[in-house]
Image 1: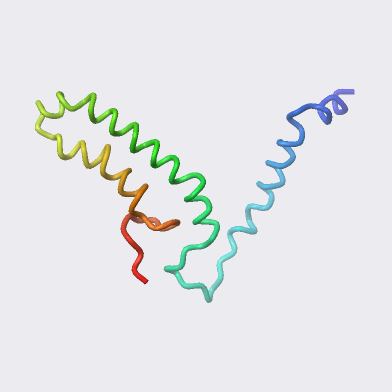
Image 2: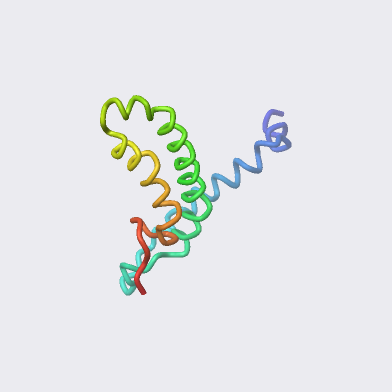
Length: 110
């Protein structure tokens, strides 16, 4: 009786999809011996575009707000430049300057 109720619930299909995706995870871990180590995969680019960039943009906005609120205290402590680098510049640089899927900031040289 409880199994039938679970099958009809709104949780069953997303849970089954998540389970199937987790079982397919080892297929993404295939390492090609002939692949160029500097080449970025499509999975890395997609994950960066859909997950990484929005999170880094949010970190940039929140870091800027935190930096502005903490500015009087950091000015008194003499580390305005350091706090600005860590809270604003680093997330902004990794959001807007880093190539899609690359692990470090900077433009990719062709």
